[in-house]
Amino acid sequence: MATKKDKVPTKAKAVGKDDLYHDIKQEKKKKLNPGEYEELLLTLEIELVKLQEWVKANKLKVVVVFEGRDAAGKGGVIKTIAGCLNPRICRIVALGIPTEKEKSQWYFQRYASELPAGGEIVLFDRSWYNRAGVEQVMGYCTNDEYEEFLRSCPEFEKMLIRSGTILIKYWFSVSDQEQEKRFQDRIKDPSKRWKISPMDIESRDKWVEYSMAKDKMFSYTDTKQSPWYVVRADDKKRARLNCISHLLSLIPYEDLTPKPLKLPSLKHDVAYVRPPVTEQTFVPEKY
Image 1: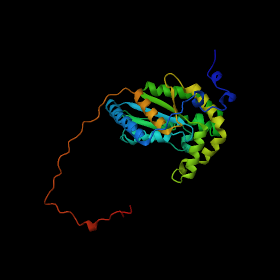
Image 2: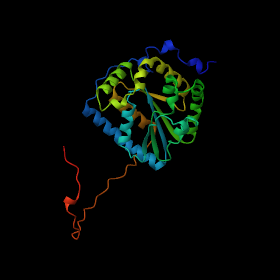
Image 3: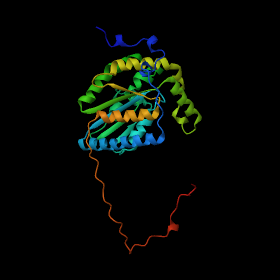
Image 4: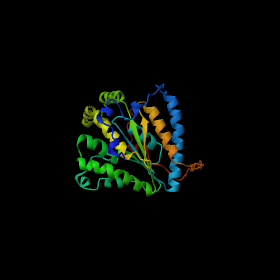
């Protein structure tokens, strides 16, 4: 009987493929114009608000994990989802490099402390899967730590699901040509240059290694209870729309949006005299 390790693709099979993206021929679609995109996005944002109210009312615990190569578009879809929701209900978790104390803890401990309470949605901009990708490829963890992660991660996720947590995992798949284009754009644009790091540059030399690490990660953690959903992300706008639409389809919800409120007329107290405007400090109007 074949084991999980028997199913791991060899290096030869990984060469020339990015995730599942190039395994399937894709018909080139015409890019969405800004007006069309905004109209479609607005419809989805309204549904996200409905989902938010349902999560709040039913004390649901929702975790959405976003993984993928650098510049695959994870951050954009996360900000799009969170941008129309109440930050007290939907929050983004993007942990930095672990401290020395955190390195000595159980690996999942610092992620577990960020999990949602009832009525919350947590969006992980990278997650515990750092160990299966960056840490393993760049040599930031030992082989024993890596193998233990592959064994324990499915069990950790089963525990979350049994505890009532809704766990959804997305992998953003981008081609090497598109990633190169986005890296060049970040280098040229000073407002985006912070998005690219020396590690991102080094990862370009390890494209195949990252592909192999992703394939092995999927072989252990793409389970029936907690599957990976792959988002084709060469087209950023379509990737955002497809991901949000799919997310909405996974959690049954009803419309509990509060009804419009009627604002009362402003009351002007004639006995109140405002202080002189000259006593206040205003921001210079340069624009």
